[in-house]
Image 1 (spheres, one colour):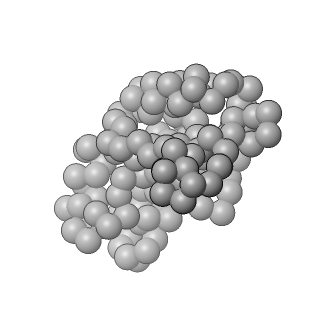
Image 2 (tube, one colour):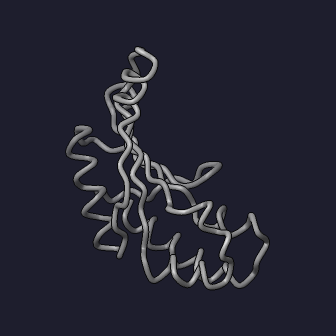
Length: 132
């Protein structure tokens, strides 16, 4: 979406963009698709919090991204890893900017401490960073 590199954060990667929220969601979907990820789910947190709690919240959407070949490899190594799938990508408003954040797949792979998952997590992380 821009030439700058995603920033590493505690749980993943983050990028602040000078793109309106709705356009950022569409560009994020397209960039994920280019890297082999489909969006399996989309949760509009602002809408859900208004509906369930009657509170106002900033625009905040969670996209559940999945790369089927990588998910398959991961599930072959660790069947219980499905509890941690798909990889979440967040698009949210922060003041006058839009922030896009993605979970680092290495975090998912580190939980079962299965070294066979590391190469798959590396590839997934490379693709997610490229999408950001």
